[in-house]
Image (cartoon, rainbow, N blue to C red; front, side, top):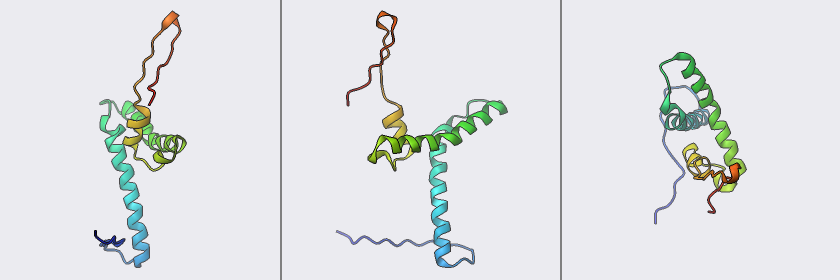
Length: 112
């Protein structure tokens, strides 16, 4: 219905040329996406009022985007560019049952 335009304005107070300013702008957008994923995920639940516990939690939170990205790449094409919340919902938070018939654990995963 409407033509698709691949142009967008950006404003800056630097003296960089347009191409360099555009690259800087796009790099900041990538970092903001990573920060949004951290704030929506592990950083939403800083566990304690103790510095050591919080520093350990932040260290694990810094590792988690890389692990989620690697998991998405290994999971297949539709998860390669997915956000962290989507990967947690579709891959990590899979409902399963762990019954112990004859005292041996058996993992029952969903069929879909």
